[in-house]
Length: 337
Image 1 (cartoon, helix red, strand yellow):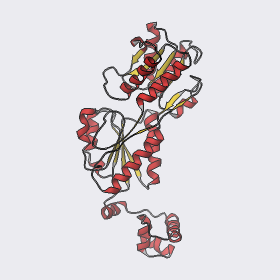
Image 2 (image 1 turned 30 degrees about the vertical axis):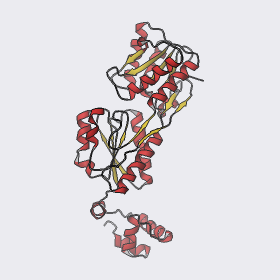
Image 3 (image 1 turned 120 degrees about the vertical axis):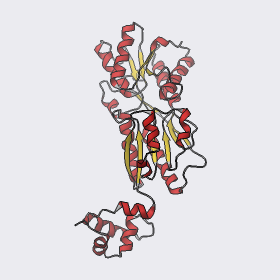
Image 4 (image 1 turned 90 degrees about the vertical axis):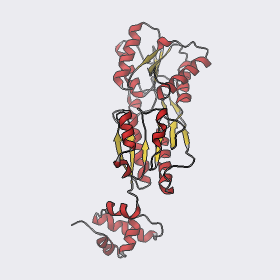
């Protein structure tokens, strides 16, 4: 038989009301009493009835995290960071994967599943600026990413232009003059690829280096295979280059594989820098110099802002917050200082 509130109260020597107060995290419980109840809960393996608790409080203790995909390490590590931050607030996270498909992203915003949560952290890739009005939902929502700016909800993102400029300046500062860029999206006006390409161009202009479109290679996705294919095209074109800036680390790991297959030494012949600072970057051979875009802080601020919305009881913030976190160049073997 499953343990009940009555069982916990009897073991802890307190009233059922006191156990309920501890379970619902009410603040006005003495520390010693709270600890005694928590010990009894652990000993008995008591599990609160979340359905009943939701009906009473109007809250589920669950938040949603909507991501384009989990096969990319950046999003998997972001999910891990969000879960860790949510746990500090006593929240559970459910994850929805959209495949970067606009129709699926729009469907999520009207999904009954999302309305069963207390709020949602949403990272779209298929939607664009013209879709901002779809974010006017009737539940707490925090937006991530670079597809929509100035929308009606709190938004946390990274300094894409400045970080890409810093990555390119780092390569130029080490004496490289022919910096290739892998991962451009030529039809994109707004998004991570467009913003990082802008930062790349700014760095070249500031250094007095002419922009050469032959050094810019496009990919559809940002996976290892795409980085490898684009690098083969670059090599086969015969264009001279002595450095590569990959617009994310997954692409860049594919870049390094092909460079090494072609007999080019890293960093002696070609210096390489990525973007994201995923765990694999540190353990690549050679280890990958990269941009840390502040993933942990993005997760922290997104959860904190969502918790504030949930606590306020408002459908949407009256004055939405737009936060941009800092970044850092992580220097490793593929592009030493």
